[in-house]
Amino acid sequence: MTSATPWDVAIIGSGINALAAGALLAKSGKRVILCEREGVAGGCMRTETLGPGAVFDPLATTFVLWVTGAAHGALAADLARHGVEFCATETPTGVLLPDGRALVYRMDRAANIAAFNAAATGDGDQLDHDLTGFLGKAELLFGLMGGELWSRKTAMMLGKQAWSRGPLGLSSVMGAALVSMRAWLETSFQSNLTRALWAPWCLHAGLGPEAAFSGQMGQVIGFALEAAGAPVIKGGAANMVRALVAIIEENGGELRLNSEVQQIEETGGAVRGLRLASGEHIAATKVLASVTPTQLHGRLLTASPRQEDLRKYRYGKGNFQLHYLLNGPVRWTTEGLEQVQLLHLTPGLDGVSKAGNEAERGLLPEVPTICVGQPCAADPSRAPEGQSVLWLQMPEAPRHVKGDAAGLIDTPADGQWTESLREAFADRVEAILARHITGFREQVLTRRALSPADLQGMNMNLVGGDPYGGACTLDQFFLWRPFGDTKRHETGIRGLYHIGASTHPGPGLSGGSGYLVAKELGA
Figure (spheres, rainbow, N blue to C red):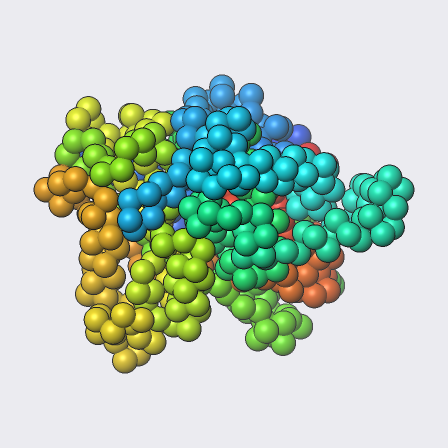
């Protein structure tokens, strides 16, 4: 069976980039269809129940990249009309050390300067200096990070920057942007506490503290958190999905669930549409594929010339998640943490480096970096009155398990994540968490752990539990994402575009690649 009238645009997948592109294109008058292989739309935006009246986001939950991005600027009014509400506290992040010392980061520069100076004389002043200095580079950096790199607009922006700064000045700025997180922190801050606040944030960019550009990403994140906080969607991330789908459908578009694409059809170097696993043919003049390079060139396209590129393409560390429904409020043993939305539990910069190195070598980290989300702080509707939800993410988990860095957990000979391995590692994380929360274990009503294998089972784009669509090291980023000769989001087949976390501008809930391609197609 073949669709009678060709669609203007067929989109594979229904994650943030697919939905953003679909909404923008549908609003512009294009006939749009999205095909999603799962029974639920949203990709990494999901909301499920932990108990009666309690909801949680089992994958992504924080929308700071969305509210600071171009896609939100284009769709904000429509989202509000469909009931999307962003919720945030004034304390987006913080850090808690093993000895109970803590530092909280606020949406208030003066308060942050004072807090950093209290940790070490001069650290607050240096924070102000670094973030103010970042502001002077923001147009250049955000232009490169969010714009279409192979474009006249970007070329003009670079020309303007070269004219105003001079060629050497532009080169200096670009070189400084390559600084690692460790280099930035050790040259800017004296206190282990202030360093520890920033160190884990490179992990959320898919990088380690020794990686090039990770220090610049720390400044980008600090700037964004101060400006926009760490917003979550009221009632859960699925409400964002519902709103974007509603925008598509009210403009004549269609979303099909349980519709796995088996092949992208092309003739004479031009795309013709999709063939579904059911045998149905969907004719389309343009196709957007929100998939990994492995899926696109290894499965969906026949005789793709990219096999050598696929061999070299690397995926990053896996992700491990742990979610709790608690009876009562979270009673931190350290005061002042109740409203922190994303709190990192870590020994500090060296601890982040150690755990990441262990995961890179296939080992379960002895002391994992724990990101504790407190969604109820910003959105009390997530749980019934008198209960609380905790959202935990461990960004350093091996995709293939070779052993345990602590030597305490037995690991399978085949390296696969099993239920018993998952729960044993969850016990390790819980033991660390419980040291910092009074009566924690007595409060637990529900615990749900998700291993890297579980995450891939929920979304096939999360290869080995990698939530970033591939390693975000410099050789696989910017102009070189996903491949060294990548140009824009083109694929070499006319009308076929590659979007998603594996493409520029990379991972995160920004909708950036979907926005860029939608604009290129006339949205």
